[in-house]
Length: 358
Ligand code: GN1
Ligand code: MG
Image (tube, rainbow, N blue to C red; front, side, top):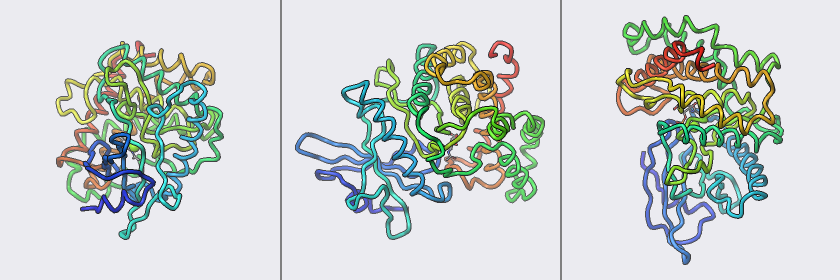
């Protein structure tokens, strides 16, 4: 779909003359564009996103959560740094002071200041970088540890509810609408064998064994911006799914993505392993920042959280593959299956190394 991006950008509080707009294809859910405006003090860049309302049914609530979280983080960071512009996302409001612009097709748009001269990684280079990443996620949680989670909206209810995700898998299997089931029997069997174990995070949250806190829910490693030379982790981005939850969802996604030696959609499964040295450095960095608020039970479940979140992604990708790729954006027909297979392989490698990881 073609959008009149110039007109859309024109609805936000942006100074200067629009000189260019490019598409950014990194996320799996929203449509993202980066614009450049010429101003008397130089080029200013912005990120514009059309929020996927099939995934986020209430974009307004998503933005209210993001506003609350970024305002809170900024309050903390201002006491620590002179310039916080590269350390927290900044929402640009519309001309009529709203968080979103609704276009004539019913599309919801938001704008952020673009954080420039930074880099992201899909896989980790070394233990130093793993430690930095762990510290960044620990810091993010620490900064939010005194924000009352109940003030945030549950924008995607049951997002990390494993049993609910399995019921979606069951449904896709029962319908087998694309005739793909026969080719994924092995993956389905493996995941069904692991069904009960995967419930632990959700169950512990429901029965109060671990506290409800503000969680990010999508802490994959390429959602952390690093300085260009990779020496500093600056900012945790993609705040769409900030909601009340357990911080174990975030430790889990961090472990899933940062200990994997291959990308999420690698097709050569021999490249997929869980690197124990990276795992160790990642958790050391994380615990160094999170120690002050972690409860003993949370601490105990961190390693398990990595396996659980890897599992939930294996289930979700496989469900979408069987159901005909309705949720995640794909670039080729087997994309969701490739993604699910890497997650399964990563779980299997974690199991082989379990004692060492713990
Ligand atoms: C989706 O859009 P993106 O890539 O930030 C998904 C996450 C998954 C991730 C897997 C709202 O996030 O839950 O972990 O893909 N977000 C949503 O790469 O479903
Ligand atoms: Mg996301």
